[in-house]
Image (tube, rainbow, N blue to C red):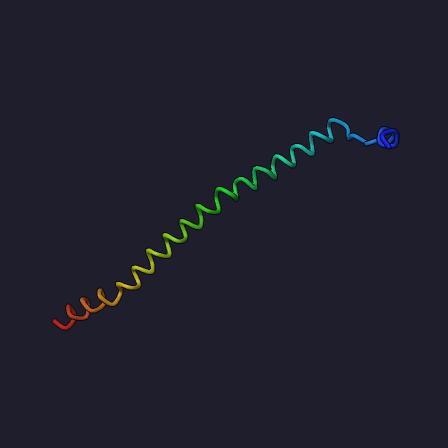
Length: 73
């Protein structure tokens, strides 16, 4: 069995091709890491924005009531 394994030839691409593959994998790794770090920050920012506008909408009626009183006077 070990003689059969030793007889198997595994082709190795030229160094230029290996470097091209490594460059592609490096770009992919950078993209994945950017998404992994950037996505949670983006979600937190959107959540904060949602809460801000939600609070503005929930206090909207109070501001409208004050404005209506001023217009009557």
